[in-house]
Image (tube, rainbow over all chains, first blue to last red; front, side, top):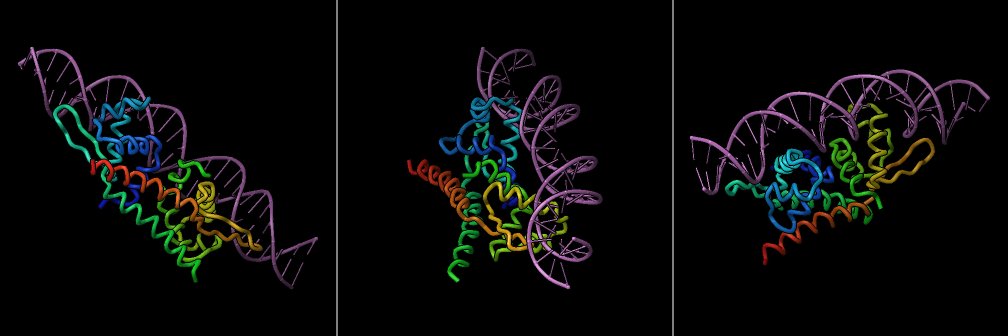
Length: 95
Length: 95
DNA sequence: TGCATATTTAGATGATTATCTAAATATCTA
DNA sequence: TAGATATTTAGATAATCATCTAAATATGCA
């Protein structure tokens, strides 16, 4: 159960959202991910760490590489957040 | 069509998310909203402005008051963002 | 063991951001 | 029009954050 604030903070950076989009297609190593960006590897590592703290991604070492993948569990929570806002709104307009 | 980055930045602050939760229940004036917080009115005004730029809220002046309300249109976009991530993930696991 | 590769950690720096107080603007009403 | 109320704007400050380089850690392999 990640702190909701961590999740939204993690999503507030365009590079981190781009990482999520990449991982949507397939699991990737930190190095592979870094190749898609113009920023340094330590910066990518920093972003991956924030995504990990938010539990938006999972990591698993395989030899020298660390593979990152999406953790969709937390996305379910996010969906609930937004659906809740919208549902209440619709309920209100039906009053 | 707000810039996606504005939307996520707007959601990245706990006070702004709390404002959205308040507006979920009913439309409120800037002053009424401020009463729910320990921070100054100018700070609340700043947060409302960011939410407005992200088009997450709408504002309408009525006399001396300015009423704020949720704008659910943009939430639909956000839902699409997350549903898209989850859908692709499920597609991948069905391969 | 020693070297190469992959990744992270440490520490510094510049940019962005949340917050404040003071002042300005808008509206209402006597 | 003058004073009161509601809200925003301006400008300053402290905290947070994204980024960098250099160094440390982890693993694989000859």
